[in-house]
Amino acid sequence: MQIITALFHMPKGMPSIVSVFFLSWAGLAPFMVLLTGYLGHLVSVQGSFEISNVGYNHGVQLGMYAMALLSITQWLSSLVLSNIIAWIGPSMTYSILQSLSTVCIGMFAVLPLVIHHNLSLLLALVFVLCGVLGVFYSAMNSIPFALIPRDVDSNVKPGLLLATLNSGSV
Image (cartoon, rainbow, N blue to C red):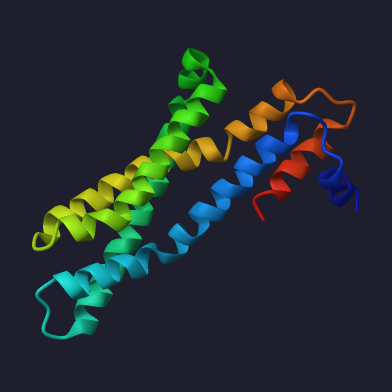
């Protein structure tokens, strides 16, 4: 009940952080769910498979590898993210990575329209984009939690503020 109350009575500085966190999750959660189907469709439509199920299933398998790459880059970038934040600050780091992720997601829509007959190149670029998005996922899941204690001046318990922020992802 305290979290619901806290959502409606957030201290100054917190609504913008929670909003960006919520919108990031709202935009990227479907990507995680639909990536395997996206690659299944790309491979079955652009590949030279006589049986479409074979191409689709192969694309879904590649989608699982792409998600694994995203997870690996997320983990690796989490090892150096604190150094980047120390260098340019958490707000600038988050802003740059948010912009980069927006471009990456847009590229998923544009690439199949631009690259028609080179499935290998298309798949390589999709994997690169997944790797770049892994860096953003690392930032998205950590930087907002660092911004709350720094940017929110409040007498509210820090645990309640962090729980309120976390509710923005669900």
